Length: 164
Image 1 (cartoon, rainbow, N blue to C red):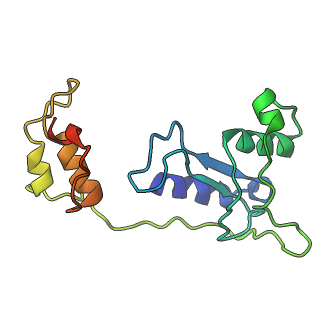
Image 2 (cartoon, one colour; image 1 turned 135 degrees about the horizontal axis):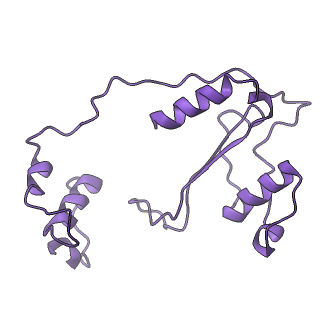
């Protein structure tokens, strides 16, 4: 996301960067549109002290993020959940064998039109009749969303909502 990139670029070029950690988590994830079970979410940590390109396989949850931030700031837990949570220890460089990378971040500015769907695209035309100002006033929206996510993949047999 360009706005996130611009924010990180500004902070990474500030005098605060050597002591900064930015945590990005998703608020109220409702599923991902893929085949993997939906009780998961992204967490991105940006800092000179984070291992570059590292993907953790450790199970963390939101209280783990809070616990990590509390430990960094030296403040007590807000409640039982974060007090008992596992802190995110595997993502950081140790400052001895691995040194922090203080190089600034440069946001990537893509030359992509903000409106990427052609005006008369098939899926765009399929929702022309919809009144998005009112709830449930778009018959066929389920099918449009399915096609956007899955392409020509056949519908699952239990997908009666598609015809709504």
